Length: 561
Image (cartoon, rainbow, N blue to C red; front, side):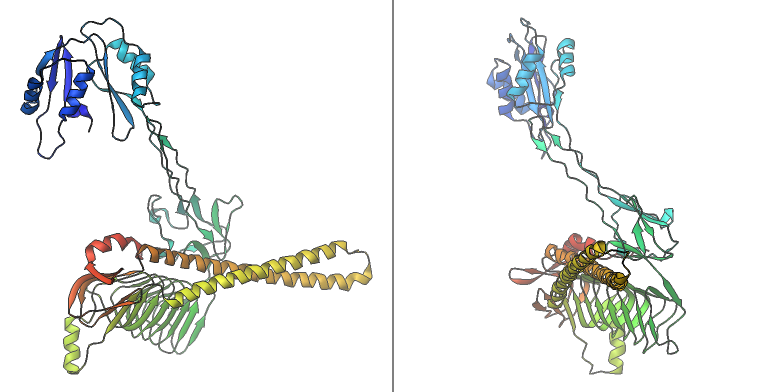
């Protein structure tokens, strides 16, 4: 706090007056040493006992201290705590012998290490208009201007449904099934801006941060426009959003999948309005199910969304999974798993986060494994379901639940395999390019007028076409593997942030529940509730959910409706 707010010395009519405001409990108080130092600068003679009496009295009014005997200007200079401003208080002598000059004021400022930001015009005004006994700002630094982050404008959405530019957008959380036409503009990216550095009045640089670029790339059936400002659709279809890409896919609508259909394979989106029956399978880029799925197989290179439940289903998901509930399900999910109601006797393995959303939701039995974070409402069956099971089988032992977080060895192996495959594809592409270059040089040397070389030229051109096709496949393979590896990089980075992962259970946790963090095991010995499990030097530690969850809530996958 500036000294001027803690005390004030005023000189008027040849008298030195001192005001010390009433002191509030816990508030910052005036310092006697500061007052004495200022009086010394002013060359004021005073009786110390009288100063102490005013200091202790703190009346809040101006009290007489002594008469003025100074013969020269006193310049009081005070810097703000952040050194962004310099305050000047001019105290004139009783009789002015030499006028105050701007050079003297600037010299006094430099003595206090104020080297820039002077307001010369205002200093001249102070001297000319005799603005005395009032601390005023005479030098200011420059406040840094931080850059703005880039953001996408999702042009394919109706304007009223587009996220605001200021919001943080996770493309994977948008449940879009928007139809677009060929040539339609899908996304415009606002570029990030650079920051402008600032400085203090003492010459210290204040570095500004630059904005972070928003990265989104064209996927299948999309491309940049010639100017590179927009991503546009290369064909008509349905918008499909990935980790950092946007594609346009064909869509196949089906009322249901049952024994009459059997197996469905489609290079695009499969949208099933009803249910998928037992002994059926669906393979697609993305799968949308309006009903439930029985003892069937779902396989997708992107997201899978099931409005109702998975009952005995085998799931392989290359993106994120959202389902109403799971019973006796085996699911392998690359990224996030979101379940609305409950998970019962299932084996769920996902790369990043796993959560059950309903406040009365639960997970019971089976194995739940996530690379980074797990959030559950309860573990074990609700009381009403326990009573029902007990009446049918008195001797039934409640199923044990294994909950585990941490990057698995399988995931690490997948990451290394992706890196290896991408490198091999790039090496193969380089070999293809070398062969193409050699062929092109041979063709340039060929005399196209000689008929005897016709077969030679035809063979070379055919080989060139084959090499081009091979090179394109290597490009697509390397591109796909690198994108998957980048997504795995995000999972690995989050694992570092979370210290190897954490488990949050906001409700009940029954005896016998097993929690693994970074391959360290914690077995719940007695019933407990509202606990977070994380790793420390001594192994797994437990703490209250509410506090730790605040730090990690933003990393969970949130479906936008």
